[in-house]
Each structure stands twice: as structure tokens, then as C-alpha cells.
Figure 1 (cartoon, rainbow, N blue to C red):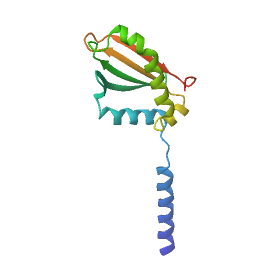
Figure 2 (cartoon, one colour):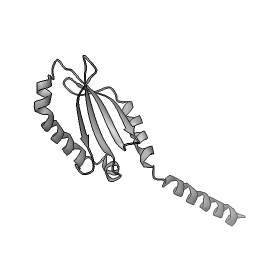
Figure 3 (tube, rainbow, N blue to C red):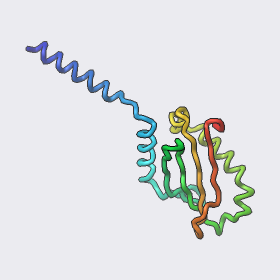
Figure 4 (cartoon, rainbow, N blue to C red):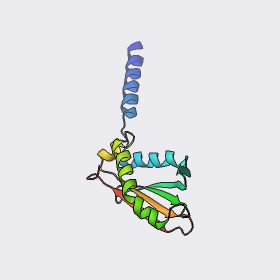
Length: 133
């Protein structure tokens, strides 16, 4: 009797371990990341820039970060002149991010979209794919 109970317990433990080793699919991981980040939004990124939302586009395998920019602080000219510097800064951050490693390994692309606060129109969009990273 003891051996049967012990064997059943061992099988249950093995099944529990196997189930806990389930590695989330890319879609599941992205959905979980978006869900966690949504709790922290909207979030100030820097003066005049707010991260409003984050979405995963499964069709294009892209994480899209949507921001609002105070267009009284960031004029079209400032955006044009600072675009390259922002691109390089974001590229460095994504490339060095340990939190995004699996997503990068799975070929996920990243898009940063900045909208004008007064009009809601897109001011800037920056895309990063595997070749960039």
C-alpha cells in the first residue's frame, strides 16, 4: 500500500514539474508583457513625453509603443533634428535589454510611435528589426 501511494506521489510530482516547465509561446509572452506594462500606463518617459500604451501586432510580429508628445515643447524642427539621436538611443537600449532578449531572439520587431498631444497626429515613428539589433 505504501509503495502504491509513494508511486502515485512520484508521478504527481513529475507531472507537476513537467507542467511547470511549460515555456510560454511567443504570443503568450508578448501578451503577458503587454498586460504587465498596461498596469503602469500612462507613464511619463521624460518631460513632455508620455508612454500611453503598448500593443503586440502578431501579424507583423512587432511590439508597438505608443507615446504622446507635448508639441508645444517638441516642435517639428526639434523632432527632425533629434530623430537620429533618439533612434540611436533607443537602438542601444533595445540591443542591451536583457528583458527583451527572448523577444529579440524570436525575431520580434519594435516600433515607437509618437503622437502630437494637440492634434493626435503622428509626429514620429521609429522601427527596429533584427537586422538593426
